[in-house]
Amino acid sequence: GAGVSQSPSNKVTEKGKDVELRCDPISGHTALYWYRQSLGQGLEFLIYFQGNSAPDKSGLPSDRFSAERTGGSVSTLTIQRTQQEDSAVYLCASSFAGELFFGEGSRLTVL
Amino acid sequence: QKEVEQNSGPLSVPEGAIASLNCTYSDRVSQSFFWYRQYSGKSPELIMSIYSNGDKEDGRFTAQLNKASQYVSLLIRDSQPSDSATYLCAVPLYNFNKFYFGSGTKLNVKP
Image (cartoon, one colour):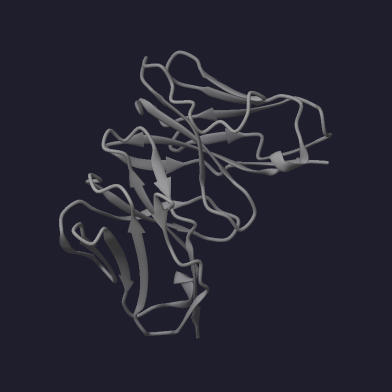
C-alpha cells in the first residue's frame, strides 16, 4: 500500500482480555516502530525492529506487552490481560532514511 | 531530565503572525532533528528535518538548530488557522533505533 496500515482502527475490550494490534509498514522500509500516545500526551516509545536484528524492547511497559515482526514486514503488538491504564492510541511507524511515517493508529479502550 | 523537552502550550498567535516553537534535548551527540505536526485525532506527519547548525527554510517554515545550546526551534511565518495543531520535536539516537519525542506544543492560530 501507499502508507502504513494499522488495524483495527478502534478496539474496545474488557479488562483482562488479550488484544492484538497489527501494523503493515510501507513496502521496503526495514525499520518499524511502535509508540503509545495517551490522551493529550506525547509519544511513548515501545519497541523498534530493524531488519533481522534483535528488536529493541526497552520501552515495553510490562511483560504483558509483546511484539513480533514476521518476514521483516507485518508486525503484531500483543497486550495480555489488558488493564484500564493500557487505554491509548497505539501508533506504528516505518522508517526510511531516518524519517518516520506513521499509520493512523489503533485506539484501544479498556473498560 | 527528559530526553526532549517542549513547552506544552497552548501557544496562541493571531493569523499572519510568526509562531515560534522551541525544543531542547539532552543528548549532546544527537545529529538529526525532526519536527512533526499532529492535528487533533490524527497521526503525526513530518514537516521539517534539520541536521546542521543554523537555519533551514521550507516555505513558511524555518527550522533553527544550535547544537552548542542543544536547542532546536521551528518558526512558522504568516501563521494560518490551518496551522493550528500540536507540534512535536523528535530526536533519534545516533543509530536511529529510538526516536525520542517531546510532549508537543499546541498551537492555536486565531483568525
